[in-house]
Length: 427
Image 1 (cartoon, rainbow, N blue to C red):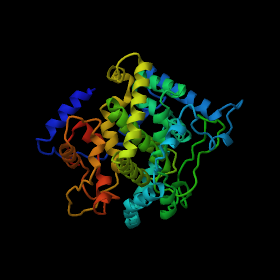
Image 2: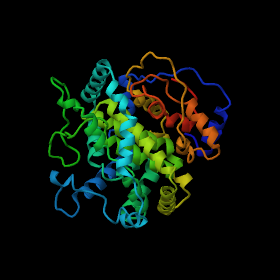
Image 3: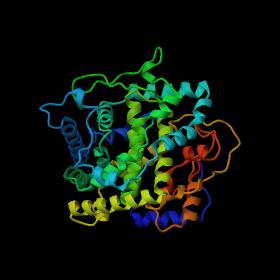
Image 4: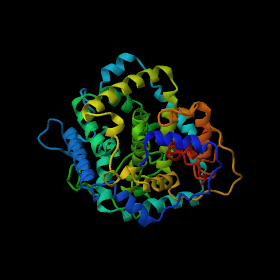
């Protein structure tokens, strides 16, 4: 477990050494299952399990609202309440999220999808089939909770550790972080336009597929098999998970890396349910990172962000009864998102084992402003140093969805996890 200060020191030092030996993005399936299981209620640690149970309880209550019981018909209508999210504050600001323009930018970013080979698409289907069929009961239950909690921020608590996670849930329920809750959820740029543009069938709709549709025994608990509508590429839920996790990470750099890993874990849940391919998850990571960087470089948005961040941090300190840096610390045994194994998991989710194409390696071209994503976790570095770190830690060229030039190539290769911990390994 590293403190924020040690991360800064490590990252500063890494700028002055050459890249390390190559590290693989592949991960033994048994190893993957063990890592993922540790982040579900099947965990062996009582503190983490208690936090997961609290998250599920709060989510079910939110979905149920004032009704006597929770029915499936309530799922699509459930949203953050005015108490949880200060929508009036956000509306009064008059900020324009330019949804249509950003949707078109996201589509352009993902155009390499149309040029993927049949072999890559076939392997993507084989990968989702394997993950879906081999998923444990704990993974399936966690995936169901992630899926139905899309309109809320409850899922982020388990990446904050038992102590800060509880404080986050308490503050969220009391309406003490309502500005952050409103801003984060409104910063999700819908993937609907991209889904229509690419029009790619979901795995469970493929002829002769072997996907196991997961019955709901965790949220509504009616045994109804989980499915999804609209196109597969890119994943809307994953866009939600990465956007929410990354924005909260920017507000809480004490938990920056665990929150990044939670975004990746959220995307993995979509594969567990058999409703998305790895390519859908990778594409949504790309657009979420691009969109968050875009917003953080926009002065009017940044002003709102700072207001929300200030309210959030003040509320969490109040709920914790101590400084955030102390509240964010935890025993590694009760905090799987602090486990070093999550580094291997995050690297795996950057490619899901899909092969890189043999191609002449292109240098990493960092788009203007992308370094803003490292300001919070690495405040001691200059903009130039952060850009250099993004280059040093970038994924090797040639993996699926990196075939384009400029931003298309960069956002697929961006490894914020390793950049934030100062790992200069080229893979």
